[in-house]
Image (cartoon, rainbow, N blue to C red):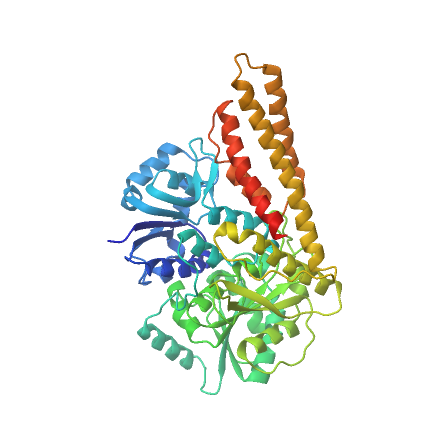
Amino acid sequence: MGKNILIIHFSRLGDMIQSLPAVKLLSETEPRPRITYACLEEFSRPLRHVPWIDELVSVPLATVNEILNEKGIKPEVVERWIEGMPPFRRNYDLLINWTHNQGSGYLCSRINSIRKEGRISGAGNEILVSGNWGKYLFAAVRHRTNNPINMSDIYIGMTGVKHRPASATLPTDPESDAACRERLWEMGLGESHIPIGLQLGASSMNRVWPVENFIRLGEMLSSRLNARIVLFGSEKERGLAEMFLRGANFPTIDLVGRTRIDDLPPLLKCVRLLVSNDTGPMHIAAAVGTGTVGIFASTAYFSLTGPYGEGHIAVQSNYPCAPCLNSTRCDHPLCAEAITVETVWEAVCLALGEAAGGEKIRGAALYRSSFTQEGLLDYRPVSGENNSFAAWLISRRDMQSRAVHALWAPWLGLERRDAPVRTGDGGTAFVFSTLGTACVEYLEIYREAMDACRSILREFRRDRPRIEYIKSRIEMLNKTELKIIKGEAPPLLKEINEFIMAEAAVCNFPQLARELLEKYAVMANIVTRFERGC
C-alpha cells in the first residue's frame, strides 16, 4: 500500500495548475500513494476529474479568509473547524503546504503527519519552513531575478520525487473537447482559420498589457495569418472585452464571461496558441498542451511563473525595476506599455514556427522553454534588444541567475546546471568575482559567530562562569546578526539563513548557544560550498 499524502494549496488558479506536474509525478511513484488535495472551492472545478488526485477537498475563499487569515488566528476557532473536516483529522505520511499565508502554517501544525514540507507554524506560532526546497521557494519569491527554477519544478522538489518532464498534466474529457470544438464552429471558426486565443485580463490589473495593443496584435494575426481571434476571460474582465470589441475591425469569437471555469481546459485545447498576461488561463492552456505566449510585466517574472512545458515563449519586460514587489508595484506600470506589439508579434511567430517578420524587439526580451537533461524546465533567451543598456542588463541578470543556481543546486540535491563560462570579458568574470567576495565575507561572519558560541559553552563549563564575559559574547552574537542582515550576501542566502535560524529551539543559554552553533555551522557549510563553486 502506498503512502497517504495531503497537499494544502489555498492559492489562486495559476498556482494550482502549476502544481499539477508535481502531483502527477508523485502519483507515479511505486507503490502508488493516495493523494488528498485541499484547495480553494472557487478554483477547484478544473481539478475534479484529475485522475491522480484521489480526494479533492474544496474550501470557500471566505472560510479561508475568516479562519485561516494572515493575522489574528484564533486557535479555538481553527480547532472547531478541523473537527468538522475529516480529511484534516487523518494521519499522513507526507504533508505538503504550498500556501503562503500564516493560517495555513497553523493548520498544518495541527495535522498529524510523519513528514511535513513547506510552511509550518512552530510551537509559539512562529514561521517555520520545513525542507530545503520549501526554504528555497520562499527565498526565490523574494529574489525572482536571481532564480531560474520554475515554480512547477520547486513543487516537484518539495515532493521528493526525481525531476523529469510531465506532460498532459490536466487531462480533458473527449466529449467535452468535441462539444467545445462544435461551439467554436457555431461561433464562426472555419476550417481555414488558425484559432488563436487572447487572454486580456489578469488577477491584478498591474499585469495587464494594454487592450489597444491586443487590438493591434489581433489585426496583425487576422490579416497576416488568417487567424480567428478567440477572447478568453472571466465576467470581471467584461469591460476589457467591450473595449477590445469596440476597437476591433476583424471577426472575433467572444467568450469573456460566457464560460464556466471547468469549460476552460477543453476550450483552450481547441486553440492553436494563447497569448496571455501571466494569469490562470495561461497555465491551463499549457497544461492541456496548447502553446502559449506569456506577457510578463509588473510583479510577473517568467523564470518563476512561466508556463510549464516545451516550446512556450515568454515576453519579459526589460525595465530595470521589473519585476516589482507586491509592496512596491506601480498603479500604472510603464513596463507593460513599453512592450511593443511588434515584439509580441515576433513571439507569436516563434511559438507557431512561422517566419518572423523581422520586427525590432523593444521593451522586452523573448525566452523559449525546454527541458534540461536533469528534467528541469528551462527558459533560454531567443531574442531581445541589441546594443543597448537594457540588453546588457538582461544579459547580466541571466548570467547571475544561472551562476546562483549553480551554487544552490547541490544543496537542493540537483546536479550543477551549466553555469556561465568564466571568461575575462568583464561579464561572467565579474559575476563570479562578486559572488566569491560575498562568500568570503559571510564565511568569516559565520566563523566569528561559531567562535562566540563555543566561548559561551566553554565559560558555562567553568566552576564559576564569568557573567560579564558571557554577556560580551552574547553581544558579539547580536552584532553578528546585524552583519548578516546588513551585509551584501550571495542571493537568497539571507532568506535561507532566516529560515534555518528559525528552527533553533526556544531556550536559554547555554542550550541556546548549542542551538545557534549548530545552525551557524549549517550556514558556514553552505557558504563554504559556494566559495568553492566561485
